[in-house]
Each structure stands twice: as C-alpha cells, then as structure tokens.
Amino acid sequence: MSFFNGQSPLAYDPEAQGLAFRHYDPEEVVMGKRMEDHLRFAVAYWHSFAWEGGDPFGGRTFDRPWFDGGMEAARMKADAAFEMFEILGVPFFCWHDADIRPEGDTFAESKANFDAIIDLFEEKMEASKVRLLWGTANMFSSRRFMSGAATNPDPDVFAWSAATVKTCLDATHRLGGQNYVLWGGREGYETLLNTDMGAELEHMGRFLSMVVDYKHKIGFEGTILIEPKPQEPTKHQYDYDVATVYGFLQRFGLENEVKVNIEQGHAILAGHSFEHELALARELGVLGSIDMNRNDYQSGWDTDQFPNNVPEVALAYYEILKAGGFATGGTNFDAKLRRQSLDPEDLIAAHAGAMDVCARGLKAAARMIEDGALEEARKARYAGWETPEAKAMLTSDLDTIAERVLAEGIDPQPRSGRQEILENIVNRYV
Ligand code: XLS
Ligand code: NI
Ligand code: NI
Image (cartoon, protein in one colour):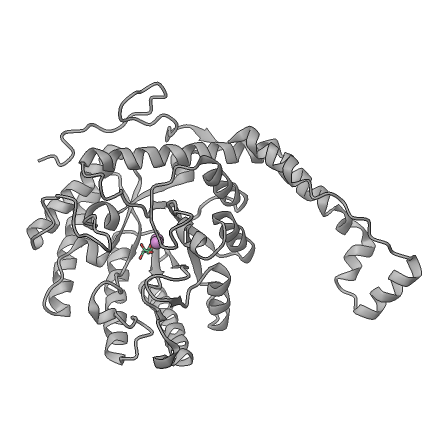
C-alpha cells in the first residue's frame, strides 16, 4: 500500500513544473565530490512521521493512519517512512526511540517493541540504499523526564536514562549509524529555588563520560554528538550554545571524544547566526553534523521550518566547506510542516524544496571558495601578523612590547573593514 499515492522517485529536472529537483543533482561534482556525498541529507523521523500537527492552542491536525495503535501502526509508519526515503532518494534518516515504537507499560516492554522495529529497519535498510545518520533517545516527552534525564534530582530517572541510552546506542551501532546524538532535552532548570546546579552539572558530565566509555566498549566507530540549544523546553538549558558545550566538554576531558550537532534554529535562539556557531565549532575542532531548518526571527521559540533562504544556507555551507566538509556528519532536516499542510504531497514537496535550497547554497559556497576573493580579503586584513616583529609579540611579554612601542614610535593607522564590498562579493554568488 502506498501512503504517497504511488509517487515515483523524484528526478533531477531543472525545467520541471511539478515534483522534481531543480537544483539538487546527486551526481553533480562540486569541488571534486558528488553533491550527494557533500550534503549527506537525512530525514528526521519525528517531524515527518510522529508529529501530529499540534500547537499550544490546538491538537492534532494531520490524519495519518498510524497515529493510534500499537506495533501494527508502528510498522505502517515505517513503511510510509521508507517509501518517502525512496521517493526523495535521501541517503540517510534519523530517529528517537519514541518516534519509532509504541511505549510499553514497563521498560522491558518498551525495549521489546523498540528492538522489533530495529529488526524491521535492518531488513528495510538491506533492501534499500538508505542508511542511519544518527540515532538518539527521547528523554524529554514522557512526564518521567519532566525534571530532566541525567540531571534529574531522582537517581531512578538517571538510571532509566542510562539504560535508555545504552539501548539506543546498541541499536544505532547495530544499524551501522554514523553518529549518536544527545540533545539536552530537559537538561536544564526552571528555577534556581529548587535546583542544585553543581550536582546537576556533575551528573551530566558523568553521564556523558559513561556514554563515551560504552561507545568504546562496544566498538561503535561513529561520532558522539551534543546538540546545543539555549532554552525550550527548560528556561535555562545547560547546553546553551557551542561555546558553552565546549567549556563543559573540556571540564570533563571529553573535547576530543565528542563533537557538536549544530541546528540553525537553535543558533538563532541563542542570539547567534548559524554560520557563527559553525565557524566556532570548526575553530575548536568539534564540528560534527548539522540540523538544517529555519527559525522564525520574531517568535522566540523553535519553529523548525524547512529552510528556504539561499543566502543564509550558502554562508553555512561556506563554513562547512572551509572545515573540509562533513566526515561522519550530514544535513538532517530537523524540520516540520506547518500544521495546515495536511497532504502527503506537502511532505514530499517540503523536503524536495529544502534539498534544492541546500544544493543552491552548497554550489554558491563552493563558487565563493573557488573564486577566493573573500579569503584573499580576509588574509590581507591580517597581513600585518606575517612580519617577524608581530609574530615575536605572541611569545613576548607586556614590558618588552611596551618598550618597542616607545622606541619605534608605533602609531596604528585605522583601515577600512570593507564589509559592504565583501557583502557585494557574496551577492554575486547567491
Ligand atoms: C529539539 C531538537 C531535537 C534534536 C534531537 O529542539 O532539535 O529535535 O535534534 O533530539
Ligand atoms: Ni535538532
Ligand atoms: Ni530543535
């Protein structure tokens, strides 16, 4: 049975009027690599197949045949998901445990449901080309996690969370996942009046260390990723942004073990741009993967819209290309339809459009790099640091430098930052 009305796989056809890719040609070579291998697209199971279209003022708007039901419904959902992967030709997908299996009455029952779906995925993945970009655990939806998972004041929730991550990491390993993601969920707090912040941070650090140890124990070769987000669901989230996460990793000696999964919308919520977060992660050596979406600039919450802003996406891929591209990471569409977009066709169109936007962004980024004008200008701006006197300062001390300023009569002359000229260069390509 087809959920997508027998839709055939989308073709690359720049002239097409209907459902097709107008810019994404997986085979096109960009800077020596196939576009598919650069972008490494993934569909997010939760938004596309588990989300019901609710908002704070109203519940379910979507009508999906798998919404109410147990294992049979979960299998139907998997059929629809794999049908869509095939139509889009995406190389990857991502899941939380809670997206793919019905919750049981006990941990053991939930685990049995989960393992049965992982068996099904294994079969389906053998029959198709799609692979797992990452798995993760949903440790925020159930009321059990209302005060956090690893940072919960109740040690039984810590234990439950450890068992959950073990189960999800085992499954990710079994399916050949490229990464394993930990997004903070409710690792944060609502009020300091009831919170022991020191204990919570300590527990979170221990928890992450155990995850890393377990990864090595089972021989999982993927990357462990943390996904920063500043607020929502809790008022104060401990994984605020890339800089905060890096400080945390350093504190627990994990900066060479864990990388970051950066989401566009989370960067905006943190008061940064996407490219800021990407550039910082690259400079710190922790750039892992991206959650591609678009955030509303006025709302103040995580709107998870499909991307449609080519200039923004181009600057993001510019930073990724400068980092040498993805290793185990990829472009996961952590994006959902608007709740009035009811039809199966909307889901296909949303992904196809987003893939085209990313393709345009990638191609523009590659041309900016090949053109070299931006990097030349950046280099020229710092050229003064190439001189031996300037280099010597970095291993010198304040009084030696002060003496030189007096002796040589140093008198800095301000120079233009040329921002508008550089923006005009970017505008040639986007
Ligand atoms: C929520 C996060 C979530 C993670 C996976 O805001 O983006 O979807 O990507 O848990
Ligand atoms: Ni995300
Ligand atoms: Ni998000």
